[in-house]
Length: 326
Image (cartoon, rainbow, N blue to C red; front, side, top):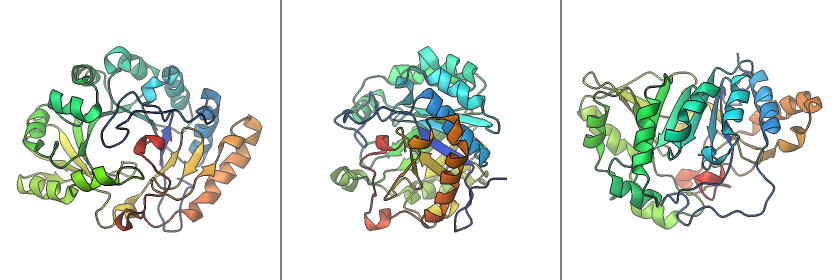
């Protein structure tokens, strides 16, 4: 049973751990000008990650998602996966990636202990994909996803950010893709961040519109698993795959929050759009600080707010999603 419970009765069996802020894509909704190093201290080391995950597992954390930036830029990613997989109590190790290195590395990640995979794929149209990401790498991502489906992952999910006037007409193509594939596509409502206001105003489309179209086409909302992510998942008897919808602007979205975040430099974030971070890195330098680390983590849950401030235009400390890990 998890010992991570906040003042609103929410429990937290799920940690999103960023491994890097760097990314090799230039997605229009996140890092349109590319990643630019800021000279701050480096990202968490393997030993620091090992100590961090051990502490969260001691508090009941069962699912760890490795994120970025782009986590596959870390040369020690297989070792990180193996270290997380070896942590007592952790039973799900997931990875979110832009997918461009999948053909070369996904087998090795699976052998290291990775159990679930999420791949960003914002369009099934190669030209649109290149326009959104700034890179003509659709073929690599497609090949990697096809390989991943043969490796026995517990789940393979594809993430597509909904963009008005860019890719919001692709639901029929996605449905056809899912007809015979045991994968899930997750449509993510574009979120306002600190540096994308103009882009947000041009391209934001409410996810509820998509959900209405799904229900009209016979897709049915499924029960939500305890350690699931924020998506509302739909299934259809005529399709092998599923569709998830992440709608951060929907009513009561935050009521089901079950995840915490740690940045690539070791700050605990209680909310993706929170106003502050709690530094954990000073307590990650020695195994002798384990009890203090566990105490610091568990004491912070009383500070978690009931919900984000996106409806009021408050984006907190998040300049772009790569800075926190989404």
